[in-house]
Amino acid sequence: MGLSQLVTQATRVPDVVGHTANCLDLLLTTDPDRCIVTVSSPIGTSDHCLVKSVSTFSPPDCDYRGERRMWRYKSADWDEMRHFFASYPWQQVCFSSEDPSSCADAISDVVRQAMEYYIPYSDVPVGGSAHPWFNADCAEAEKRKHSAFLAWADARDRKALDLTSKKRAFNHAAKSYKKALRKARFDRITHIGKKLSAQPSGSRAFWSLAKSVEANFCRPTLPPLCYPTDFASLRLFNVRSSLKE
Image (cartoon, rainbow, N blue to C red; front, side):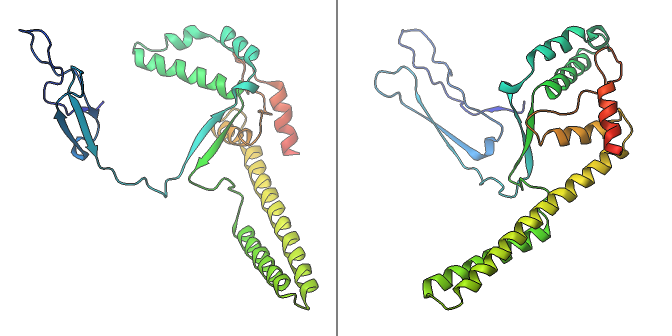
């Protein structure tokens, strides 16, 4: 695990003659070079020494980009998940290899697959943009709307004669901004739909893209491609066929 124990002195003071002092208080860390440990006398009537650690760490990287998966357990379909597990051919998974670690990984994959099928989830960006469809046109429209708002607010404060025209300009900029957002969303959905319909049924690329689409909704709308019996899902075939039309 890469842990280092930094307390090197005895920390437990024996209260019986003949007993040996022992190091019973430990400090484990993966970055020992950034920690300074000192051991002082016990406080009050304690029979353990005071262990003090001073650590220095750099501030977190503000430019970190990643995703965090949020599971909505309250909306899960537990009955279908239980049926999935009860019907799954576990013997093929549990004894797929002589290596216990490989078998454990295979079982974990099945459990995660069931979770993704029957527990709604969403991948929330951490430190990045929550709206990947927000493009340069949206940003430019947002700037124009904000600029028009400031001009209108300034005209109100000055009771300017062109107040009405400034308000009209702001309304126009606000409508243009909403139009840009709708177009950006539509373009992204269209792009994903074309990519999804172009992938072969059951391929890894198809399901990877389908799951990314499902993550944008409270509940998955696409049924699993294969059931535990390994028969293809007719429902999914019909859904995919409608996407191509």
